[in-house]
Length: 306
Image (cartoon, rainbow, N blue to C red; front, side):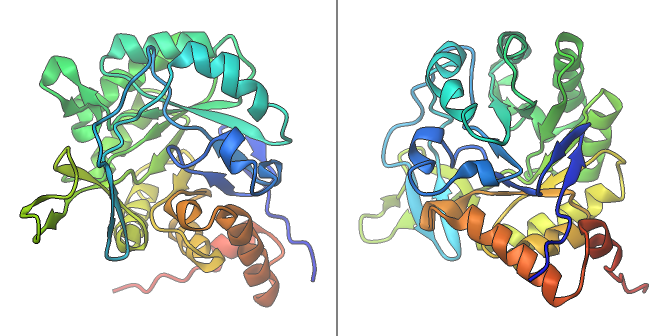
């Protein structure tokens, strides 16, 4: 087996391979018990807010056909605790650290970003699916104006590369992508979870205490691939694709649709070593198809012209 070049440049940062973890599904102390996450191109942390968030009441995770629905609610200990307790563990590994940033106001986003500026993390992923408390709880990422506003504010307070994570719960995701690119996003990641619901017909009530939750897993992959494809044709910045990636060939599909890297989330909750196995599957596919580099792989995609 040969060793194809799987390195990729994201916002001026070279990753040794295109596989990253997805926010909300990885921690150094827990995931690190199952595999060496230093073998990945980067790790993306759970969401980090300016203050500790308790998250939503239980039950807050439920299985669904082809995936899961969760309403964890971005539970986290806050940025100060993250920097003190989690970041030292992350920095022991030979990989890039990308911190997912959460907030309920633009000021909260900026506060977290300013504190992370003082660390040696590689990038920040800004989760604009968070509820904007000043707008009645509507997500920052649901319209171009609010998505642009938070991107502009964060861009002003940091020199580190910023990745804007898009919600799929919109009418035109390409317009959102163009809006954040115009305000200084260095990279775009998509998709976050789709809004879903499950009812227990025996108990005659919603399964989740929060009623609604985010659907992830293989069920959302066709939607995620479609949205990556659309955004690739709307922006020039790098794209990190995610949504239902379970195998190396799933990762290839996202790369062919226009992603430059991919994140693995739900798969790792089922199989903790999934990110490593997906990396191995990607390399196996490239060897089988005689691809020497990711660039060759992406350029080989043939889109049928209708």
